[in-house]
Length: 260
Image (cartoon, rainbow, N blue to C red; front, top):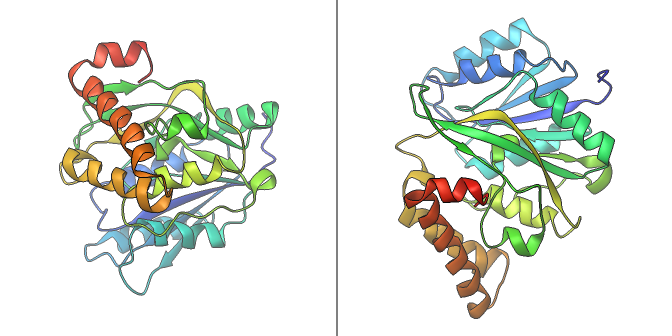
């Protein structure tokens, strides 16, 4: 596909010096050249800024925004969205990476089919880059289905501002990506999955996803206070979320077969 559509890549960064160089290089390695990378530093106390500044001098498509106070990923990402110039908005955290074909294949997928929100298959690695597992995806998902479990990896998501405008993250500290996809699915009937592994997600021991109890708490908060579901609706969705989490953890082979 001939590059014609600018993609704005939104990357929040907080004390990411150990990973962000590899992450930035995965964007530089894209065979789709019409992108801008907006890095939003959330008051890092390590040497992240010096790493980022090195790349800014190398490529003018890379831009840096420094927040005045530590505000969390939602504020950082929204700041990037507000400054974005691209038709398409994509997301990449500072410890994850993309396959070189990621932008090219996903933009082509969206343009050819007229999709507003898409996501792709991806795989997980540990902090030293060892392969852990592949995350399969359903080929499409609606709001009511997504409520039961988030099948959209933030590092794979892309939306088209021409179709739905700029949509920002709800201002919550955790699960804001899940909340954003639900917000978008109130504007368009489905999100569509490109069933190709195009990204690598780093599982870190200090991440919220590694703490299942806290993740469950944040999910419950999202149901009750962001989506404003009734108690019964929340119990229904939460039971699906818990059951699928158990299957993913204890029966990964079954989870992969059924795209759970």
